[in-house]
Length: 408
View (cartoon, helix red, strand yellow):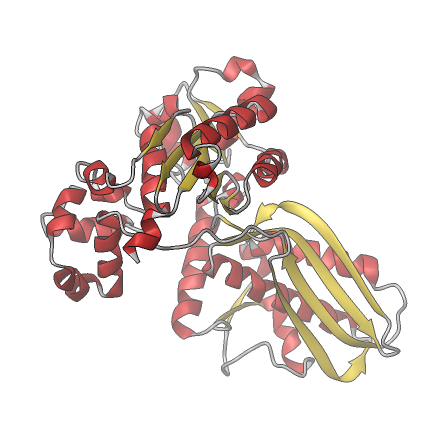
């Protein structure tokens, strides 16, 4: 397996302070200034910040009011997720036209498998030229890390930033990782980091030297994964990017219906569940669509491209808007469906432009309840009416906790 890994060439590309860089393309006066992008209300959170702002200790997901206290001179911008999605698509197209296999890990982050390219071009030279092309055609700064696997390449990109690149030669993975903080390993979150600190592990070199079995006892399977990453071992493949990736659900009725309020309620319940599935899988959708099949089997579908999101309060109104547009015949309905297309990884990052800290915390709490007690442990009041309409009951359990729409 190690031989298979050593044959690979994996590059990780990451657009530097992506949202800030896009804003600076449209307003050169922002160059060199501390910039905060995110919710502008008193309850807003930071979606992204410039490197100048990071020097003050500011980071993404920080409450905006706290960030402004730490850096009063910062320029605060609400942000435009539609514009950011547009520039992400530009960079995606450039990479798609240049490499045989790539993965879009998030709106501003990519992996590419360049295995075999070195026989013809040289992977470092090829990636340098790709980076130059992206900078020239998009106007955005981008950094990359090149190594034999995704873990080392991602860490290398972090060390290369801003607007630079690092190539870790084959066999140099452990030496490169050793002096770095364990916090820089992908997958080591705040809790894992604190637990490692309690074990006296601060640098990756210490983690490299610990017995894997000890880490298994403390962290379970994740402990062994951390040990492998610390030692530069990662056989995770680059997942081919596809615009066709989607998540969907459908409901066929026992008896065809024209009960519009119940249809709306079921659409809400279906969209709410899919949103939860997106967040659980750390995915965002860039396109929402619905299907309506009538009693005569005529089927209508309609879709709408949207800024990447996984938030109920953004997607449910879109689904209801699509239903209002498509349901014009006023005849009996046999089946309805909801689909979210153009999925990318990214968790909640885009939603920070509109969401307050309170809403983000509320989503986290709701999802935690669902993870523990089931998908339908918490439901919107607007979707509760769907209990009695579908052949497949969208609610499990006898008494789900209702969530009034005004709360989100």
